[in-house]
Length: 350
Ligand code: MRU
Image (cartoon, rainbow, N blue to C red; front, side, top):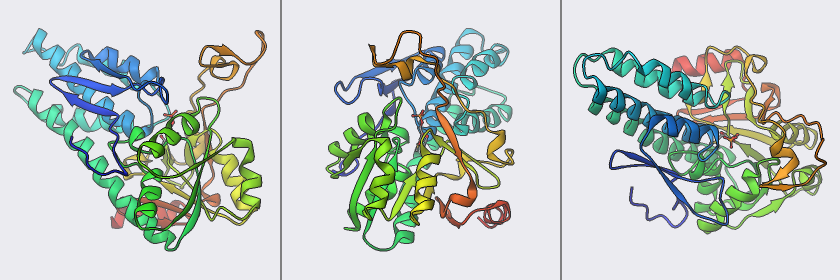
Protein backbone atom coordinates (compact mmCIF):
# COMPACT_ATOMS: atom_id res chain seq x y z
CA UNK A 1 0.00 0.00 0.00
CA UNK A 2 1.40 3.40 -0.98
CA UNK A 3 0.90 6.02 1.67
CA UNK A 4 1.43 9.69 1.05
CA UNK A 5 -0.44 11.39 3.91
CA UNK A 6 2.07 13.03 6.25
CA UNK A 7 -0.43 12.59 9.12
CA UNK A 8 -1.02 8.85 8.44
CA UNK A 9 2.17 7.16 7.29
CA UNK A 10 2.37 3.81 9.15
CA UNK A 11 1.14 0.32 8.21
CA UNK A 12 1.66 -2.47 10.75
CA UNK A 13 0.28 -5.45 8.77
CA UNK A 14 1.04 -6.08 5.09
CA UNK A 15 0.61 -9.08 2.78
CA UNK A 16 3.63 -9.39 0.49
CA UNK A 17 4.32 -12.27 -1.94
CA UNK A 18 2.38 -14.92 0.02
CA UNK A 19 3.97 -13.85 3.32
CA UNK A 20 2.79 -11.59 6.10
CA UNK A 21 4.97 -8.70 7.19
CA UNK A 22 4.36 -7.34 10.71
CA UNK A 23 5.96 -4.29 12.27
CA UNK A 24 7.30 -5.70 15.55
CA UNK A 25 5.55 -3.61 18.24
CA UNK A 26 7.59 -5.17 21.04
CA UNK A 27 10.62 -3.28 19.77
CA UNK A 28 9.15 0.20 19.27
CA UNK A 29 9.91 3.06 19.72
CA UNK A 30 13.64 2.59 19.44
CA UNK A 31 13.83 -0.17 16.81
CA UNK A 32 11.67 -0.37 13.69
CA UNK A 33 11.86 -4.05 12.76
CA UNK A 34 9.59 -5.78 10.23
CA UNK A 35 9.15 -9.55 10.75
CA UNK A 36 8.23 -11.74 7.78
CA UNK A 37 6.01 -14.81 8.38
CA UNK A 38 5.23 -17.65 6.02
CA UNK A 39 3.54 -20.12 8.39
CA UNK A 40 0.10 -19.80 9.98
CA UNK A 41 1.28 -21.23 13.32
CA UNK A 42 4.07 -18.65 13.49
CA UNK A 43 1.51 -15.90 12.93
CA UNK A 44 -0.67 -17.28 15.78
CA UNK A 45 2.40 -17.15 18.01
CA UNK A 46 3.15 -13.57 16.85
CA UNK A 47 -0.37 -12.50 17.92
CA UNK A 48 0.12 -14.19 21.30
CA UNK A 49 3.54 -12.57 21.78
CA UNK A 50 2.16 -9.14 20.78
CA UNK A 51 4.35 -8.59 17.74
CA UNK A 52 1.01 -7.26 16.48
CA UNK A 53 -1.74 -6.02 18.81
CA UNK A 54 -4.85 -3.85 18.87
CA UNK A 55 -8.22 -5.50 18.19
CA UNK A 56 -8.71 -4.59 14.48
CA UNK A 57 -5.05 -5.35 13.60
CA UNK A 58 -5.38 -8.70 15.39
CA UNK A 59 -8.51 -9.41 13.28
CA UNK A 60 -6.73 -8.53 10.01
CA UNK A 61 -3.66 -10.58 10.98
CA UNK A 62 -5.89 -13.53 11.88
CA UNK A 63 -7.56 -13.29 8.46
CA UNK A 64 -4.16 -13.61 6.76
CA UNK A 65 -3.17 -16.45 9.13
CA UNK A 66 -6.37 -18.22 8.00
CA UNK A 67 -5.29 -17.74 4.37
CA UNK A 68 -1.88 -19.25 5.17
CA UNK A 69 -3.45 -22.22 6.96
CA UNK A 70 -5.73 -22.92 3.97
CA UNK A 71 -2.77 -22.65 1.56
CA UNK A 72 -0.68 -25.01 3.73
CA UNK A 73 -3.39 -27.64 3.95
CA UNK A 74 -4.39 -27.38 0.28
CA UNK A 75 -0.79 -27.88 -0.84
CA UNK A 76 -0.52 -31.06 1.26
CA UNK A 77 -3.82 -32.57 0.10
CA UNK A 78 -6.05 -30.73 -2.36
CA UNK A 79 -8.99 -33.14 -1.74
CA UNK A 80 -9.00 -33.30 2.05
CA UNK A 81 -7.58 -29.86 2.91
CA UNK A 82 -10.34 -29.07 5.46
CA UNK A 83 -9.48 -32.05 7.73
CA UNK A 84 -6.45 -30.64 9.55
CA UNK A 85 -7.42 -26.99 9.19
CA UNK A 86 -9.52 -27.03 12.35
CA UNK A 87 -6.59 -27.60 14.75
CA UNK A 88 -4.65 -24.67 13.24
CA UNK A 89 -7.73 -22.45 13.56
CA UNK A 90 -8.21 -23.46 17.22
CA UNK A 91 -4.65 -22.38 17.99
CA UNK A 92 -5.26 -19.11 16.14
CA UNK A 93 -8.53 -18.48 18.01
CA UNK A 94 -6.84 -19.06 21.38
CA UNK A 95 -3.96 -16.65 20.70
CA UNK A 96 -5.69 -13.65 22.40
CA UNK A 97 -9.03 -14.07 24.19
CA UNK A 98 -10.49 -10.57 24.68
CA UNK A 99 -10.37 -8.92 21.22
CA UNK A 100 -13.55 -10.14 19.50
CA UNK A 101 -12.27 -9.06 16.06
CA UNK A 102 -10.13 -12.21 15.96
CA UNK A 103 -13.15 -14.51 16.24
CA UNK A 104 -15.14 -12.26 13.89
CA UNK A 105 -12.47 -12.47 11.15
CA UNK A 106 -12.11 -16.26 11.49
CA UNK A 107 -15.89 -16.73 11.30
CA UNK A 108 -16.09 -14.50 8.21
CA UNK A 109 -13.45 -16.60 6.41
CA UNK A 110 -15.03 -19.83 7.61
CA UNK A 111 -18.24 -18.79 5.79
CA UNK A 112 -16.24 -18.36 2.57
CA UNK A 113 -14.80 -21.89 2.73
CA UNK A 114 -18.15 -23.38 3.78
CA UNK A 115 -19.59 -22.19 0.45
CA UNK A 116 -16.72 -23.41 -1.74
CA UNK A 117 -16.26 -26.71 -3.53
CA UNK A 118 -13.06 -26.19 -5.61
CA UNK A 119 -9.74 -24.46 -4.90
CA UNK A 120 -10.40 -22.02 -2.00
CA UNK A 121 -7.10 -20.12 -2.10
CA UNK A 122 -8.03 -17.05 -4.17
CA UNK A 123 -11.38 -16.64 -2.42
CA UNK A 124 -9.91 -16.58 1.11
CA UNK A 125 -7.12 -14.22 0.10
CA UNK A 126 -9.61 -11.84 -1.52
CA UNK A 127 -11.73 -11.90 1.65
CA UNK A 128 -8.71 -11.15 3.87
CA UNK A 129 -7.79 -8.20 1.63
CA UNK A 130 -11.42 -7.03 1.85
CA UNK A 131 -11.33 -7.16 5.68
CA UNK A 132 -8.13 -5.08 5.65
CA UNK A 133 -9.51 -2.47 3.22
CA UNK A 134 -12.90 -2.25 4.94
CA UNK A 135 -11.17 -1.61 8.27
CA UNK A 136 -9.28 1.35 6.79
CA UNK A 137 -12.47 2.81 5.25
CA UNK A 138 -14.33 2.29 8.53
CA UNK A 139 -11.63 4.24 10.35
CA UNK A 140 -11.91 7.18 7.95
CA UNK A 141 -15.69 7.19 8.45
CA UNK A 142 -15.35 6.99 12.26
CA UNK A 143 -12.82 9.83 12.15
CA UNK A 144 -15.41 12.02 10.44
CA UNK A 145 -18.35 10.96 12.65
CA UNK A 146 -16.31 11.43 15.83
CA UNK A 147 -14.87 14.81 14.84
CA UNK A 148 -18.32 16.02 13.69
CA UNK A 149 -19.80 14.93 17.02
CA UNK A 150 -17.14 16.78 19.03
CA UNK A 151 -17.76 19.78 16.78
CA UNK A 152 -15.36 22.44 18.03
CA UNK A 153 -11.74 22.73 19.12
CA UNK A 154 -11.11 20.28 21.96
CA UNK A 155 -8.49 19.02 24.41
CA UNK A 156 -8.28 15.22 24.31
CA UNK A 157 -6.92 12.48 26.57
CA UNK A 158 -6.39 9.10 24.94
CA UNK A 159 -5.25 5.74 26.31
CA UNK A 160 -3.34 2.77 24.87
CA UNK A 161 -2.63 2.75 21.11
CA UNK A 162 -5.59 2.83 18.74
CA UNK A 163 -3.86 4.18 15.63
CA UNK A 164 -2.44 2.78 12.40
CA UNK A 165 -0.40 0.38 14.54
CA UNK A 166 -3.60 -1.15 15.93
CA UNK A 167 -5.71 -1.25 12.74
CA UNK A 168 -5.58 -1.47 8.95
CA UNK A 169 -4.51 2.18 9.01
CA UNK A 170 -5.61 5.61 10.35
CA UNK A 171 -6.97 4.26 13.61
CA UNK A 172 -10.17 4.29 15.66
CA UNK A 173 -9.83 6.70 18.63
CA UNK A 174 -6.57 7.94 17.15
CA UNK A 175 -8.40 8.29 13.81
CA UNK A 176 -10.81 10.76 15.43
CA UNK A 177 -7.81 12.61 16.89
CA UNK A 178 -6.13 12.60 13.42
CA UNK A 179 -9.28 14.04 11.83
CA UNK A 180 -9.61 16.70 14.54
CA UNK A 181 -5.98 17.67 13.87
CA UNK A 182 -6.52 17.79 10.09
CA UNK A 183 -9.53 20.06 10.63
CA UNK A 184 -7.61 22.40 12.97
CA UNK A 185 -9.87 21.28 15.85
CA UNK A 186 -7.28 19.60 18.08
CA UNK A 187 -6.38 21.94 20.97
CA UNK A 188 -4.03 19.35 22.44
CA UNK A 189 -3.77 15.59 22.84
CA UNK A 190 -2.55 13.96 26.04
CA UNK A 191 -1.40 10.34 25.89
CA UNK A 192 -1.46 8.20 29.04
CA UNK A 193 1.53 5.87 29.21
CA UNK A 194 -0.64 2.71 29.63
CA UNK A 195 1.15 0.56 32.18
CA UNK A 196 2.17 -2.21 32.13
CA UNK A 197 2.96 -2.75 28.41
CA UNK A 198 3.28 0.99 27.72
CA UNK A 199 1.28 1.14 24.49
CA UNK A 200 0.76 4.89 25.10
CA UNK A 201 4.34 5.95 25.77
CA UNK A 202 6.02 3.51 23.38
CA UNK A 203 3.54 3.25 20.49
CA UNK A 204 1.14 6.21 20.43
CA UNK A 205 3.89 8.75 21.13
CA UNK A 206 6.00 7.15 18.35
CA UNK A 207 3.08 7.07 15.90
CA UNK A 208 2.05 10.67 16.55
CA UNK A 209 5.63 11.89 16.30
CA UNK A 210 6.04 10.03 12.98
CA UNK A 211 2.82 11.57 11.72
CA UNK A 212 3.72 15.10 12.80
CA UNK A 213 0.91 15.50 15.33
CA UNK A 214 2.15 17.14 18.56
CA UNK A 215 1.25 15.21 21.74
CA UNK A 216 1.97 15.30 25.47
CA UNK A 217 2.76 12.14 27.45
CA UNK A 218 1.39 11.74 30.99
CA UNK A 219 1.78 9.05 33.65
CA UNK A 220 -1.46 7.09 34.04
CA UNK A 221 -1.63 8.36 37.60
CA UNK A 222 -1.62 12.01 36.37
CA UNK A 223 -4.96 11.64 34.56
CA UNK A 224 -7.15 12.92 37.43
CA UNK A 225 -5.08 16.02 38.05
CA UNK A 226 -4.94 16.70 34.30
CA UNK A 227 -8.73 16.49 34.12
CA UNK A 228 -9.03 18.78 37.15
CA UNK A 229 -6.85 21.36 35.34
CA UNK A 230 -9.57 21.96 32.72
CA UNK A 231 -7.38 21.00 29.76
CA UNK A 232 -9.38 17.91 28.77
CA UNK A 233 -12.80 18.16 27.08
CA UNK A 234 -13.03 14.55 25.89
CA UNK A 235 -11.47 11.21 26.78
CA UNK A 236 -11.38 9.10 23.59
CA UNK A 237 -10.55 5.39 23.62
CA UNK A 238 -10.94 2.31 21.40
CA UNK A 239 -12.44 -1.07 22.31
CA UNK A 240 -11.59 -4.76 22.22
CA UNK A 241 -15.16 -5.90 22.64
CA UNK A 242 -18.48 -4.10 23.13
CA UNK A 243 -21.32 -6.02 24.76
CA UNK A 244 -24.84 -5.55 23.42
CA UNK A 245 -25.74 -3.45 26.50
CA UNK A 246 -22.94 -0.98 25.63
CA UNK A 247 -20.37 -2.11 28.22
CA UNK A 248 -16.87 -1.75 26.76
CA UNK A 249 -13.81 -3.95 27.27
CA UNK A 250 -10.62 -2.03 26.57
CA UNK A 251 -7.05 -1.70 27.81
CA UNK A 252 -6.59 -1.74 31.57
CA UNK A 253 -6.88 1.81 32.86
CA UNK A 254 -9.80 2.75 30.57
CA UNK A 255 -12.25 2.29 33.45
CA UNK A 256 -10.12 4.52 35.73
CA UNK A 257 -10.21 7.21 33.04
CA UNK A 258 -14.01 6.85 32.83
CA UNK A 259 -14.40 7.19 36.61
CA UNK A 260 -12.21 10.30 36.60
CA UNK A 261 -13.96 11.74 33.55
CA UNK A 262 -17.42 11.22 35.08
CA UNK A 263 -16.30 12.86 38.32
CA UNK A 264 -14.95 15.91 36.45
CA UNK A 265 -17.92 16.17 34.02
CA UNK A 266 -15.74 15.35 31.04
CA UNK A 267 -17.23 13.53 28.04
CA UNK A 268 -16.13 9.96 27.32
CA UNK A 269 -16.09 8.59 23.74
CA UNK A 270 -15.49 5.02 22.55
CA UNK A 271 -14.56 4.59 18.88
CA UNK A 272 -14.81 1.11 17.35
CA UNK A 273 -16.00 -0.60 14.17
CA UNK A 274 -19.24 -2.61 14.15
CA UNK A 275 -17.07 -5.78 14.07
CA UNK A 276 -16.11 -5.02 17.70
CA UNK A 277 -19.75 -5.18 18.86
CA UNK A 278 -20.42 -8.71 20.08
CA UNK A 279 -24.17 -9.28 19.89
CA UNK A 280 -23.72 -12.65 21.64
CA UNK A 281 -22.31 -10.97 24.78
CA UNK A 282 -25.07 -9.50 26.91
CA UNK A 283 -22.90 -7.46 29.31
CA UNK A 284 -19.31 -6.76 30.25
CA UNK A 285 -19.45 -9.40 32.98
CA UNK A 286 -19.44 -12.11 30.28
CA UNK A 287 -16.22 -10.89 28.64
CA UNK A 288 -13.10 -12.96 29.24
CA UNK A 289 -10.32 -10.70 30.50
CA UNK A 290 -6.81 -11.73 29.54
CA UNK A 291 -4.25 -12.06 32.36
CA UNK A 292 -0.72 -11.86 30.99
CA UNK A 293 1.10 -12.97 34.12
CA UNK A 294 3.57 -11.21 36.37
CA UNK A 295 6.57 -10.42 34.15
CA UNK A 296 4.89 -7.42 32.49
CA UNK A 297 4.48 -5.83 35.93
CA UNK A 298 7.72 -6.84 37.60
CA UNK A 299 9.93 -6.03 34.61
CA UNK A 300 10.27 -3.28 32.05
CA UNK A 301 11.59 -5.08 29.00
CA UNK A 302 14.07 -7.44 30.69
CA UNK A 303 14.89 -4.99 33.48
CA UNK A 304 13.46 -5.94 36.93
CA UNK A 305 11.57 -3.14 38.69
CA UNK A 306 10.07 -5.06 41.63
CA UNK A 307 11.14 -7.71 44.11
CA UNK A 308 11.89 -11.20 42.80
CA UNK A 309 9.00 -12.72 44.80
CA UNK A 310 6.36 -10.02 44.14
CA UNK A 311 2.88 -11.48 43.85
CA UNK A 312 0.91 -9.69 41.11
CA UNK A 313 -2.56 -8.99 39.71
CA UNK A 314 -2.30 -8.17 36.01
CA UNK A 315 -5.60 -8.14 34.11
CA UNK A 316 -4.74 -6.40 30.83
CA UNK A 317 -8.26 -5.20 30.04
CA UNK A 318 -11.11 -3.75 32.09
CA UNK A 319 -14.80 -3.05 31.57
CA UNK A 320 -16.19 0.47 31.37
CA UNK A 321 -19.93 0.31 32.15
CA UNK A 322 -22.21 1.73 29.44
CA UNK A 323 -23.64 4.31 31.87
CA UNK A 324 -20.23 6.07 31.97
CA UNK A 325 -19.99 6.43 28.19
CA UNK A 326 -21.20 9.59 26.41
CA UNK A 327 -21.01 8.15 22.88
CA UNK A 328 -19.94 5.08 20.92
CA UNK A 329 -18.76 6.05 17.44
CA UNK A 330 -18.91 3.43 14.67
CA UNK A 331 -18.42 3.61 10.89
CA UNK A 332 -22.21 3.79 10.51
CA UNK A 333 -22.88 6.56 13.00
CA UNK A 334 -22.96 7.48 16.69
CA UNK A 335 -24.83 5.79 19.54
CA UNK A 336 -25.36 8.40 22.28
CA UNK A 337 -25.46 7.32 25.95
CA UNK A 338 -25.61 3.64 24.94
CA UNK A 339 -27.83 1.01 26.49
CA UNK A 340 -29.19 -2.28 25.18
CA UNK A 341 -32.28 -0.76 23.53
CA UNK A 342 -30.27 1.92 21.70
CA UNK A 343 -27.56 -0.56 20.67
CA UNK A 344 -30.08 -3.03 19.24
CA UNK A 345 -32.14 -0.42 17.38
CA UNK A 346 -28.93 1.17 15.98
CA UNK A 347 -27.79 -2.21 14.64
CA UNK A 348 -31.24 -2.90 13.15
CA UNK A 349 -31.38 0.51 11.44
CA UNK A 350 -27.80 0.46 10.10
O1 MRU B 1 -3.24 -5.46 24.50
P1 MRU B 1 -3.47 -4.64 23.27
O2 MRU B 1 -2.35 -3.68 22.99
O3 MRU B 1 -3.82 -5.48 22.06
O4 MRU B 1 -4.74 -3.76 23.60
C1 MRU B 1 -5.21 -2.83 22.67
C2 MRU B 1 -6.35 -2.02 23.14
O5 MRU B 1 -6.84 -2.17 24.23
C3 MRU B 1 -6.92 -1.04 22.17
O6 MRU B 1 -7.41 0.08 22.84
C4 MRU B 1 -8.07 -1.70 21.40
O7 MRU B 1 -7.67 -2.92 20.87
C5 MRU B 1 -8.58 -0.85 20.32
S1 MRU B 1 -7.38 -0.65 19.04
C6 MRU B 1 -8.06 0.21 17.77
